[in-house]
Image 1: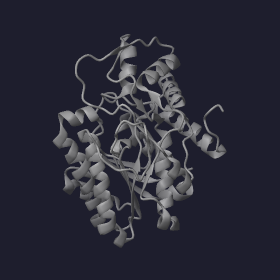
Image 2: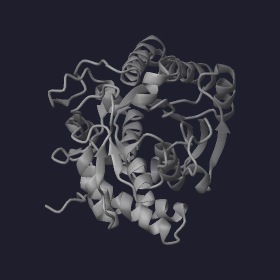
Image 3: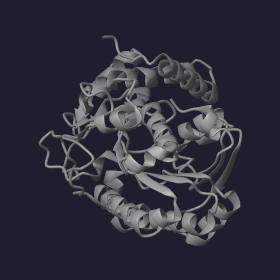
Length: 362
């Protein structure tokens, strides 16, 4: 599990800290004792989780990774020992509407981050770039992708993140290796949990429709995705960074998948019905009308390499991830603060890690 012995005193430069996953990661890093500089756009939803968390040790800088000069200034002011790059344009449908902006953020934005870090972070030890489960060339066969599979992407989002992987590989071999700075990528996706109010994501869309007493409109109800609670991949990212800074780097993979329990993929329809059941809400759904942008029907990852390389494994099934999300929603609707609800689930997850128990009834 992520250790306070490692993270306490680290100066972390975290991009994307105002997003859903970034907010959870930043909160956990703070509890582990890290000092952080967050760099990201302002939250893109109302409400949003980030403004509801008063995270100690976090200096928040609102900025765009497409603009290199203020980014470089923020890196220099932080002088990080660790960097985790999460900032991205993460939506498939938006990438169809705004392909140029998607590539500018996901490819050139990543390049700008890597440039700023290599020129303005003299204390830097390791950089982890977060990409996505959609970086693989997907033929809809249902094959569980492993790290050696061919990268590619049909839609602009997936393509841009595969290109991001190539940028990282080039920078590692061209610049970072010779500086002694460890650089790697982590691949995960379809992350769910409490506090996600983003547009065009399944759980928030289900939640909003149920609140209005309306049927949930599903584009692809039979599509399969590796749904996972946000704390599962974040724990993997932190474990990976710790391993990157040790002598283990010599044999460590330069990219790792972080995926849920192998036998727990769920369809979009099953997630919708599970959240309704967990919340005690009726959950009729309707099929979206008209033509929809092309999205892959089947997507699963094999995370066995992460287990072999760094001892990581998921603690929650997809259904348990939905249940934890419902628990968070119920707690905050019952008057508990978002901050307290996040902290409670981090503690609950750390208990799973400390006892090395799967959160699954076997």
